[in-house]
Amino acid sequence: MERKYIFFDIDGTLAAGGYGNTYIPESTKLALEKLRAAGHFLAIATGRSQAMAVDYMRELGFENMVSDGGYGVTINGQLLDITPMPKEQIVAVVEECKRRDIPWAIQIDNTIFRSAPDNRFEEFTHDVYMQTKVIEGLDPKNYDKIYKAYIACYAPTEHTLKSLEGVPWGRFHKEYFFVEPSDKAYGIRRIMDHFGADYKNVVVFGDAANDLSMFVDGWTKVAMGNAIPELKAKADFVTTDVDKDGIYNACVALNLF
Image (cartoon, rainbow, N blue to C red; front, side):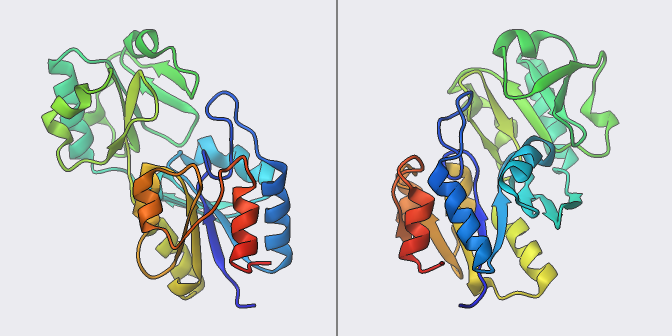
């Protein structure tokens, strides 16, 4: 069998249960073992920052990952780099939030912490996804590299922010949304180019809106049964739900082991 380069989203694809109740189905673990035994290249492809996803790498035995929405690349357990977001985009969003008195935070390094200028972001969100560190006088203009921003508000406030025009963002929590990269295909191509591998041997698995960026022509696209309709419409194959042996069933159907 020709070697495939298989990329998996985490939440809703590899992991079931949702935030706070996340678990990896046993059938998924078995499928990963069989894929490795068959000689395939396996990688995670996540919107999460590399620091927020590395535990999944260790738990599931991955050594390769596209992180940070496509802007981070880890190969053989080593982080190659993370491309920061355009600084002017983050500054513009933060400045508008300041004018409108909307709490905000930014990610200035590859850690499990976001940074905020005061306690208002934490008080508004009571977030458990990651920790918030207060830096008095925090100003994005003072940092050369900013990887993400977090804006605390309820929907549909984000649609009224003029600074978001042309800027990638996504909402995964009721209390806030992310301003973050959304081009997983970019990171996948970087890994493929690193190994000199043919794009046609890529297989991607996903379920959510931030996976649309890797559901592109030129490789095989698998949507989970629990995926959004837009992703299913772009898929070459739709499998069962993540908690109904979705990964395993797709691997069988695609003759991957």
